[in-house]
Length: 136
Image (cartoon, rainbow, N blue to C red):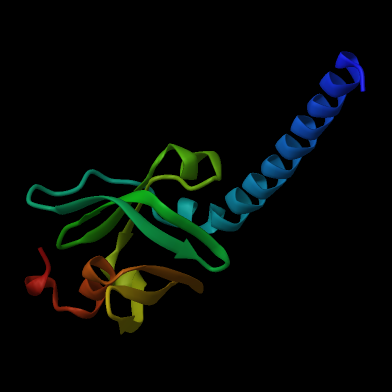
C-alpha cells in the first residue's frame, strides 16, 4: 500500500468510528431527556454527602465511574463527568420521593425513577427508603 492509501483507510475508519459514537451518544441523550427535563439541577444543601466518580446505569446505559454524586435530605444530585456529558447525561437533582428503591445487593442498589431503572451505589440509593430525618 502506498502512503496515500494508508492515510485514506485510516481516515475512513476514524470517520466511521465518529459516526457510530455520535449515534450512540444521541440515543443516550434521547433516552435520558425525560429525566433531565423532569428533574432540573439545584444546588446541594450544606452538609450534603459527596462522592466523585460513582457508577450509575439508566435502563440499558451504563455510566461506569462517570457520575459525581451529592446526597442531602431533599435530593439526590447527579453531576456527570465530561465523558457522560458527551453521551447526553446532564445534571439532575432527583427528589427522594421520586425514587422507589427496589433492591440492595452489597454495594449496589436498583431503584425506579419515573419508570426508568436506575442502578447505582447503595450508599446513596438506599437513602430513598429512609425517613427524611434519617438522611444526611
